[in-house]
Image (tube, protein in one colour):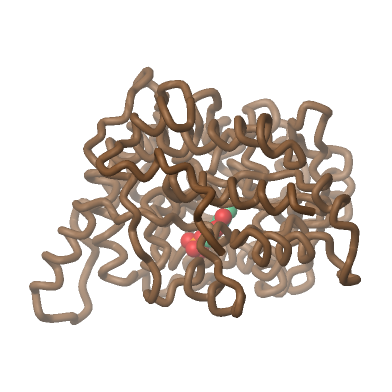
Length: 444
Ligand SMILES: Cc1ncc(COP(=O)(O)O)c(C=O)c1O
């Protein structure tokens, strides 16, 4: 696989993000709106254009896919939802400082750990989280699983609105529950909504919980207050717990708004648990650290007893990394959002002008792009008798373009014909991947 089609202007030494955004890609200057903070340009304090080499670290996104794809080369792995950037320096500094203390006995989280969680949610979302209602979890999925095991008996149904994050399909049976899949509805403009009638049908049928993904992975839409309220009213009416996974909430583009579920009002807050972490926002997934909170203290204490939380100690390094992230990460997060906005805008322009067989509506939240590849699938036909369109498309993009993106079917039955592309990488890599995909499609 050759990179010869990459736009050479992007390789100019010392070219910063602004230079890329305004010249090579002909994009408008990027700004980002964080709630209550107005519009901000990038600080340029962090070099997000650095091509950080992850090869050889044993990570899933690069090393695993490159191993599995052999003999094909995959210079553009854009599957697993993590990011390619160098970690924020304050995180590395905090970890290094702890390494200098040469003892690893049991230890408590830093004294300001919960306060930094509270501060982050207050500053960015004007959400007051009572520190006494925050509990640790070993990642968000662990917390989801604990909540399910607390409110469900074996065999109980759990509603998942799909397309939705693929691991929920294993977490639900892993908690001995049964998946009740409800298809999201999409209008002609590509806007998503819940199917409230279908949801009510499943609730009447005895579903005990709804897993909400806010914003939604993989479709990238932010749920509005009205949508959340309608869904929440149903959950409350039928006494099903709303498990609000808001792990992607720090990535919201400047035209969109994230509504924290628990801010809808007391009735919604009391019948829900919210799960978050720094693992997406600051790319700390390997540290296995997350947190959950709910105003419903009785529910929280049941989760503590029944869930996987009888010790509450997390990995020391994970806690230190997370703490440093929330303590020092405001500017970094704003810059990262602006950089992701740049990627999304560029992708949109590229699909409209250069790669018309792929349709993309700029996502509102997450750093994931949901690409409608039905026209490409049609062009390809089914030459090798694949059962799944997504597998065929995945193979095609790996073998002909060196790009790994994820099949839409992984996220539910309505994902057929879509592919999920992770934009958590440099402008240069994204541009390279798109040029390569375009060349492959043009050659069909
Ligand atoms: C919606 C959602 N929830 C949870 C996770 C995983 O979270 P964790 O690694 O903290 O368990 C992901 C990872 O992609 C995700 O997209």
